[in-house]
Every structure is written in C-alpha cells, then in structure tokens.
Picture (cartoon, rainbow, N blue to C red):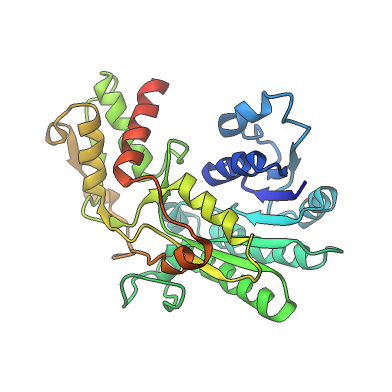
Length: 324
C-alpha cells in the first residue's frame, strides 16, 4: 500500500485528491492547521467512515510555517508521495496580505522541499503551481516553456515555489514535479472566489433570500476547468518514470460574464434583472489572456479534461440550492 502526504487536505483540491488516492488503495496522511476543525466540511464523509478514518486516512496537526511540526508529521507518515497543495490561494487577497502570502505560499514550499530532501528515503514531491506565474504573458496559449512574469503577490510567491521545485529537482535529485494549474472550480470552491460567489448568490436569489448580485469586472477572462479533472492530473504527474512540469488547463477562455449567464440560466432567471457592477470591486492588477496549452500532459500523462465548463457551473448552482 502506497502512502501519501497531502498539505492542504482540507481544501477543494486536497479533499478530492484524498478521495482519489483512497480509491486507489493508498494510505493517506494530511496536514491540518492547529485549531482547525480538521476538514469537517470537505472530509466529513471520510471522517465518518470507520473503515477509513484512522485506518487508511490520518490527519496531522501541522502548519506549513512550522518546520518542527511538519517534520514530525512527515516522519510519522513516511510517505512515498508528497502533494503540496497548501497556500494562501486567493489572488485578490494577496494584495491585502502580501507578506503572509509570500511567507505561506513561497517560503512554505521551500520549507517543505528542504524537509523532504532530508528524509531517509525522500518521497516523490508534487508542487501545485499556478497560471498566475505567467502574469500578463506575451504568448498565448501558455505552456511549460512560457517565461514567468507574475504581476500579483500570489503569482510572485507561486513563481518562487515553482523555481525552487525545479532547483531541488535539478540540483538535489528530488523527484519533484510542478503542476501548473489553471483555474479550476467545483462545489467545494472557497466562498471568496468569484465562481462560488456567483453560484451562491444565484441560488439565494432563486430562493428569495437575496435581491441582487454585485460584481466587479465581468469581462475578465480565465481558462476554467473542473477540480476533479485537475486532481487526476496531479496524481498522474507523480506516477511517471521521470519528474517534469505539466500545464493542466482546458485551452478555452471564458468570461466572468459567461459564469453569470450560465448560473442564472440554470435556475431559469434573467441575469440582467439582478446583476450590478461596482468599480471598487475591480482588482488593481488582473492578469489577462491566461489560457493554457495542456498538450504535454495529454501526450505524456494521457490526461484530458472530462467535465465541461457548463457542467461545472450547473453543478455548483445545484449544490448551492441544495445547501439552502
């Protein structure tokens, strides 16, 4: 039985990855922040299963900023694979929490790489990088050879982690992989992300609990995929004979406006009656034309997205209606 260690197991990607690994007969260990509820929301079904929790799923109190706690958790888990997903991951909030973002997202990655390197049997290491490392790129679509040019604190922190992962692969011989993840969504997306904000508001409007939806720039475009597809790619990245970097993306651009229209369409309402724009919600620097080329992942990993953008938004709206 392989053993895996996941940082950020409480989040969208971490919880889906835990489910995928358990289905593939792994023993799964995850780090949770001290004082956290232990992923009650996304891991509740796994924790409630006596055949899984404390049998093949184990949670460790360890913050990515606490080297000693992380070292102890890693030594106890003795993993074959480490998946580093934890970060301060909201781009907009990174402007308000610049130092925290760089400390957690950037230095947290370096700290974990160093701990992994010093283990008696260094495990394979996956780093969840981001399309934000490209910033405002000169070429489109972006692939693994596109120069980095971050324009946000979050993008800068992810760039540091991405480059350090490459350095540890090249200089220290670690089996270290960067997955350059473009935006990916699901009903487990954080409530402060625009996709979840829209779907939640639409459900509330449909249910009569909210009257309108206020948004910033709805012309902003992203390459949006589904989290479950991307988690499958994350796992595949560590199953190869040699470590490398991979872009996970759909290759298609969509506007925030497209999310708005699809979400209202899912509940049979006219979006124009409920949406209002506010200039103060516009970001100071927003990357444009971030669209990925996943050809390498398709060629080497046999990976392709299976869940469409339209399916993802409809599923998110239905999940919000069910929650209400």
